[in-house]
Figure 1 (cartoon, one colour):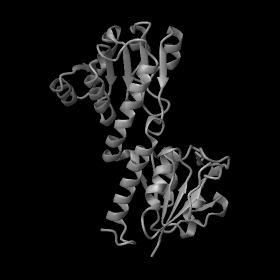
Figure 2 (tube, one colour; figure 1 turned 135 degrees about the vertical axis):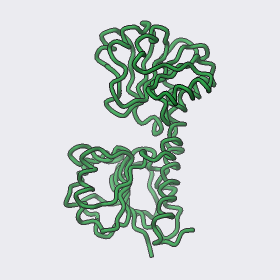
Figure 3 (tube, helix red, strand yellow; figure 1 turned 30 degrees about the horizontal axis):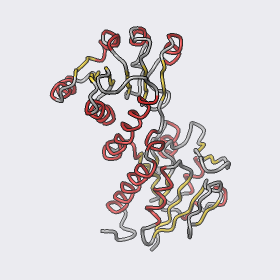
Figure 4 (cartoon, helix red, strand yellow; figure 1 turned 120 degrees about the vertical axis):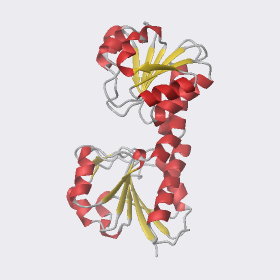
Length: 297
């Protein structure tokens, strides 16, 4: 029995994801939103969204960004506008599974109403930790490109000590930066100290930014406030890794002449092949564990 998978939209990461899935036996892949791609995938069915027979699909893979608040799907390799509606989800099989990178309120509401199984991959610890590696490398790349001093001996503050913040702090420290990490949790402050880094209570961040060359945010909330920015040296750079709209007062940073960058989708820019393989490996792992349609062991 074949497992029918539709990959709808996606960025450069999805090219490797498709290659990985294509190598699995008893899978039928259907690509939607790849009509402008210069390279072709031999043997795969490419179709327009309106011609997709969703009643036959076992798996749907949406882009990392999922949908916007109107159900529109990001299509980097197509000019076709794809909008997924509540009715479309109703037409899926009862046991169909939908994968996405992140799920906003709109997508969550639609799949809840239609009782569709939704798996946001970036909510998983394994995906987020794997992804934190190209994210950290991309942050290093951006720091080098946007400063005129070495990372070694530079004063770096990372806000947040989650899966991304931990890796970013570790990588910058390994390059010889003087790294401080701001967080709310007392257990995280203890771990930061154990790692040989400088702990900062997040609510006291403005007291420390005057001694900062690179301020890197990983928290998806407004934490890089006017108070924190106004104390930064004029040559400091802010790199915000949080999901859009980030956690920085970009308007005030602009007023102060501080360069502030919202760095989105770094894995797809820095290492799309690695990031795509990460996604494919986890999807295959989930299907192997939870779907016995192929008898994978």
